[in-house]
Length: 305
Image (cartoon, rainbow, N blue to C red; front, side):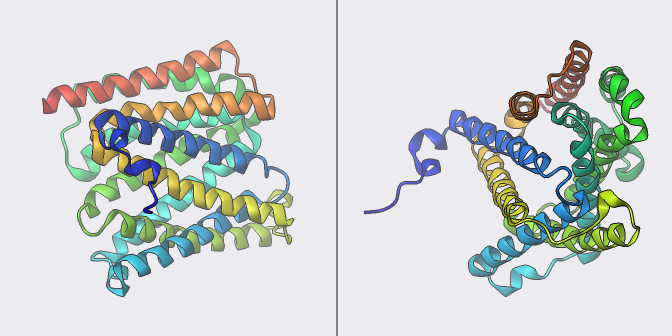
């Protein structure tokens, strides 16, 4: 008797099914972030990031080898693939360090600046025309950022800006993704970016340990830390796969707004697990950032329709 996996059922092959798959993927990403946050104070955030991506790259490489063979490991533009990995490494370091000291919902909200930063950078880097809608969305988003950062900047100092650094690096990776589009399967693209990020993160973890800073000390971790890193490596890969499946069924433009479920999940888990109840100003700022992103997305749809 053949095994009937959930994503093989007829309902999940429709556009509605695609939305369900994408929602599950985005929710799983925030769940993984919550698992990462549970390791705050137990191990260096740089070491956590390094182990998470080393495990992820190894696991994905095995799958790629079995599915596509050795030839799949030859990227057409290796330096650009390495750049993708470096951007992901920097984005991950900033975000992991941020959620170790900041409420999960607030750090997640600031990450949603990435699409707007990408649109702004597409002008000078890709020579694309930056539309008026992009500038309008940027101004709206800036107001939201100011509201979210208001309490954290005064309490944490410049550490509160780490999610913005993560959003900027993630934006550069998205621009690099455009440049390598069509140069391999979706699985090989995941392998290349994870394999590019892992060694950078390992070197940064070593540098953090050598620096003597207590928060970056790399000691032998408890087995539960290793287990949680492995869980996140698996759930993140599964999440990206679900989003990919959702995109193939419903289309990228249709599922794009679904990414904001990550913020809802982050707020819920942050409240239930860590007791981080966001105040009214933080929620208002998050809402403004989401409105800016949805406005930019809708303007893009109108342009292509």
